[in-house]
Image (cartoon, rainbow over all chains, first blue to last red; front, side):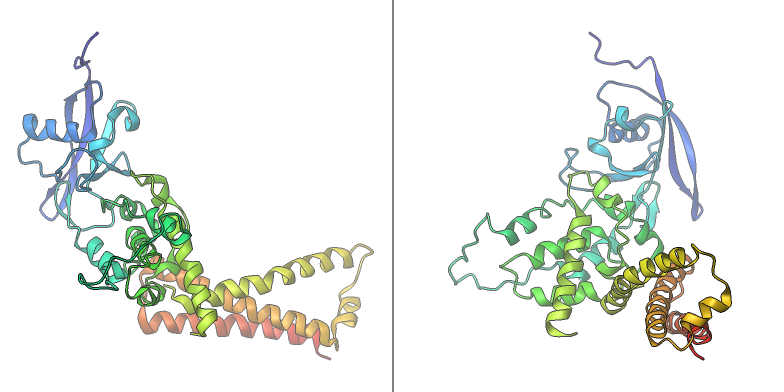
Length: 244
Length: 110
């Protein structure tokens, strides 16, 4: 049994920033068994060009910092096997779509997190630390809906996958809206009404075209598409209930 | 770019249009089976309050629906926003409504 098949090489095109714009630079990278995209990028930086800039931290799919476009689709690179996405022995690696590029494969995540906060992402407590802890039944319907979205690691894969974000700069995007949906269903949140009002404004959940790239590509198997549909229903119900 | 009110207006106008579309297509297919001339059709529609209300509401719903849809497409394709986008939405509604209303009055009024 061999541990590697490094007699074959992968042809890897990597986006490099140059003078305010950029171009794809191609590298020959030795192929190995069980190799991830992050392994490939790290190999290039360590063996071919130390100036290549990219971002990663945990390497185990928890921190959400290593997402990049791989052969046209956003992926968490630390847990994406080369075999899963390789096309004709070629890889094309680029910075995440829909975000400003800082350098090479590193994007500025500020717009993503700003929208996350502006969609009502901050927790507003209902009690102080001196009050007894509120009991929440894990099996109740609202808690189940909130639980479905809380494993988001903010990797921005859904944000990069979303064509509505690409065409509508004000649109909050799937991750921020999914966070809003968990809060709307969180009995311990103090101002759930405010979150519903925020996601009903221009740029809110009504702009989603239900294309579903977010759900199809979420590396954690979450379903922002259904969360946004839930927000649409909740905001609509609220409108007919209170008349505005 | 949509907010809740525009979203609801578009969805509700779509719901209103569903029966209108089916009745419109159904009557059209049924009516021409035996061969009908334009004057025979106008003979049945002109002066009819039913067809005036039917196509009148159809025109209102479709003008609203199309203007909001156009607004979304124009915003996402060109990035147009603010007052210009609002003017385009309302302008679109007025043009669609005028064209539709003209046709409805021509076909249903004596």
